[in-house]
Image (cartoon, rainbow, N blue to C red; front, side):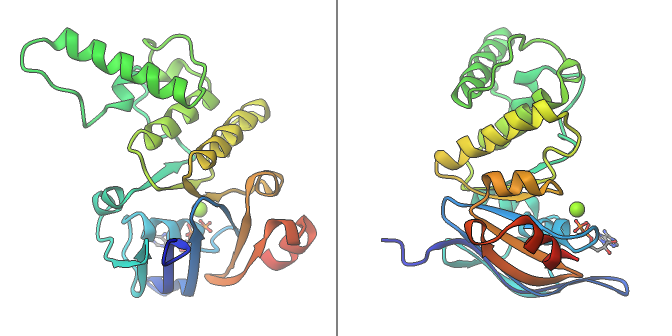
Length: 243
Ligand SMILES: Nc1ncnc2c1ncn2[C@@H]1O[C@H](COP(=O)(O)OP(=O)(O)O)[C@@H](O)[C@H]1O
Ligand SMILES: [Mg+2]
């Protein structure tokens, strides 16, 4: 038995930018193995809250607990070391590099002399990572800019997953995708959950939230409105709570 059922707890989080109170006394709890949908109107503070969790911003006040232990996430590097990965709307891939180069960017497998060997090893590991995630991309060696938007997002998610995180935060991962591609990204998110990961999903697409999430967190003008079990609510209610 775990002593604590939450992988992440954010407590009494405040953040302001100049005169703007972006977050006011926000509490967020993420359960082990759940998909938590995070919704709210534009400027509600969703991205800011997640950037605090991933070390991009520091809260003005508040505490964060990871697996029951208080942590001080002072940088993205610390967040990653804890096992938290972030996936953004705009992929953050290097468009002129191929898939293996993108997956291993900044942590290339190095050998002093045999550069070709190293490349082949990264390629076979990339094949393994993508097949493990059931991402069917045939041509690994083309620049990622030539992949479809959905394929690029899948590679970005694969990259996040390849760090073996415990928590993945996704900020509008389907926002720039065509409808047919959204389906594949949602399947990938559900697959990560099956593997035991805990996921926070920000999206404007309430249909997607209702399809994949276990619980829904509503943020409004920087304040937590509620967390509801997805099965205990509906779109009309969530929209009323959001606006
Ligand atoms: N780096 C920043 N500098 C100044 N204001 C910011 C910054 N980041 C966010 N904000 C402000 O904080 C508020 C919440 O923004 P954000 O977290 O991006 O909302 P959401 O993701 O819900 O649309 C907005 O008023 C936004 O303008
Ligand atoms: Mg945002």
